[in-house]
Structure formats: structure tokens, C-alpha cells
Length: 173
Image (cartoon, rainbow, N blue to C red; front, side, top):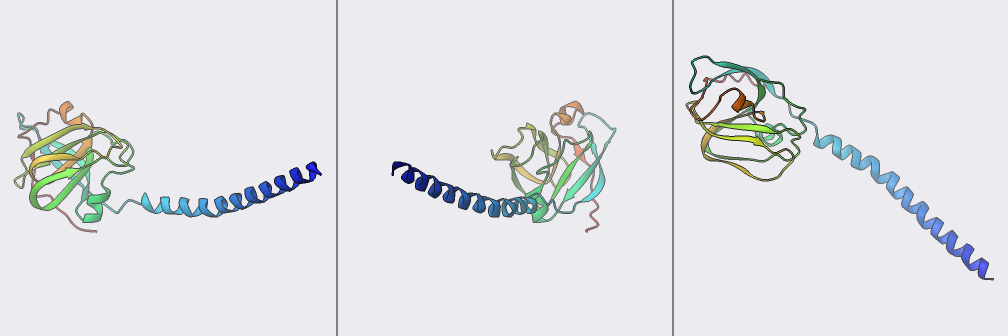
């Protein structure tokens, strides 16, 4: 009779495992679909901008994506591949105030350049660590924020006092 008890226990265990497999098979496609929605980047207008290092008269051209809407600001460069040299994202805000960013879901190191409403570089965060939720503060008011590849500002001799050429022409999407 002991063998009958073992068979019943094994049958009960097998039935529970089958139910668990069914639940996983139902949930896996649903979670994959939810993830697909999260990584859908907003549309960004691409423009050329110019930046003149503080101790130079020769501007440097950059190809950037413009982030002008709240949803574009929130998504930023999340899930972005490595940035080519002299490219990035320019965040345009309507007002001057201290800015705070983080690197959540951003797999590449970035330099963050904070410009006032006249286009003067007033703060710089170099080589922000990828995929972190540490808040990064401009510490001073800024209207424009340019994100470029980590350590690129140093390589191009961009430092406080460098100039972003204005106006930035935004055509809209």
C-alpha cells in the first residue's frame, strides 16, 4: 500500500507543476509585450547645432536630437546605443531653473552640459555613470542641456564659458 501513497503524491505534484507551467506560459507573452511598450522612443527632430569652446573662435558642429516635449525630456537617451562623436541630444526647456537628470536605462556614459538662456555653458557633469538612478544636478539655472558621449567635452576642450550658438530652430514634428 505504501507504493500507492507515493504514486498519489507524485500525481498531485505533477498536477501542480502542470498548472504552474500553464501560468508561466500565459504570463511570459504579456510581460514581453509590456517591455516592448516601455522601450518605444518618442520621435525626435534632428538638427545641427554649433558650440564654440571657451578659448577658441572656431565653432564645432554637432548633430543632435531635440528633446522639447515633456515625454521627450523624460525618455531622453534611455536604451540608446553608443553615440558617434559630435552627436547627442539637446534638451530645450521653456524656462531657466536648476536641472536634475539621472541615467536610468541609459547604457552609455554621458557628459551633460548645462547652458543658460544666452547659450553660455554654466555647469558640466563629466562622464555620468550608465544605468544609475543617482540624481545629477546642474546646481545653477539652465535652459538648455546638451548630452554627448562621456569624456567628449574634455576631448574637445569644452568647459565653463563655452557657447551654444542660438537660436536653436525647432520646426516641430
